[in-house]
Image (cartoon, rainbow, N blue to C red; front, top):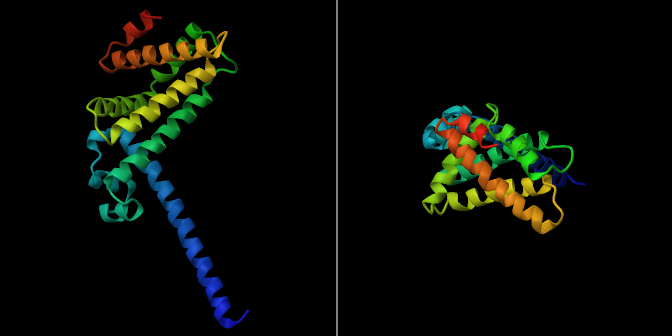
Length: 192
């Protein structure tokens, strides 16, 4: 390999290293952005406060993401990943009867550790309910992930029965999350 080939290889290695560092930095930023949105909500998530939470300027934030929509989409994706990780960590060891799974899942989603995720979910759902073209597909994706999680956890005689029970579980739990959001936690517990 000649001198020129050696320089090109070294230059390529630096570029790859820079891309990896950039990806690692973006990943670390997403954790900070997710923490901010979980604490403050989407309504407080304009570019400047998001950038401040990430410890960078708003211009630098746009270096890592093309625009505010990309920042929010990536942040919500990170939040959804974190939420599903928390749910998976608390999954039952086997399939449960629908009523048992409902109590188990309610214990997860109404827990103080999990509640920030539910608050963000309620904001996304509210925006999606207005046919917001940005939030509607995000809400659908999260809702389908909840449904799939329930389907994987629920016991039933057939797949069709599990699908129906998982759908009932989803709408029941979502209703309970809404009821908790306006301070009627005790009503949720009486409904079980």
